Amino acid sequence: MNKDQVKGKIDEAAGKVKEVAGKATGSASTEAKGTAQKVAGKTQAAYGDAKERAEDKAQGKA
Image 1 (cartoon, rainbow, N blue to C red):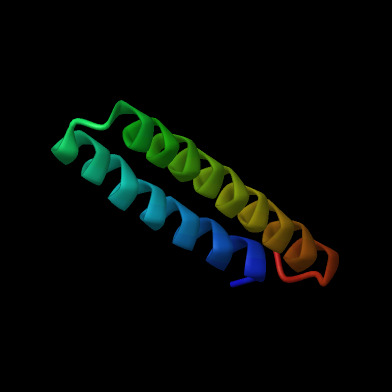
Image 2: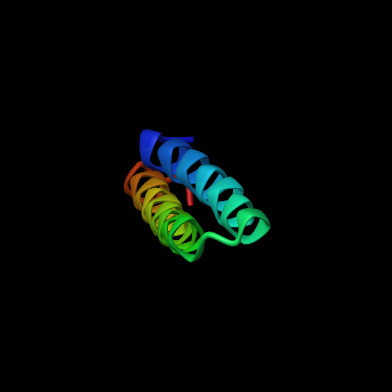
């Protein structure tokens, strides 16, 4: 697991928490920020996954 995968998963989880907190408190702003952070985290994790697959392929592991 590379740093992009780890950071992405952390941001995704933090965004989900923020999104739920926003819904619970009725704060549309917090909910939107959480959703954005969650999407950014998923994107970064996906980038990390692709990067790892490319590195594995370059090393002949795939």
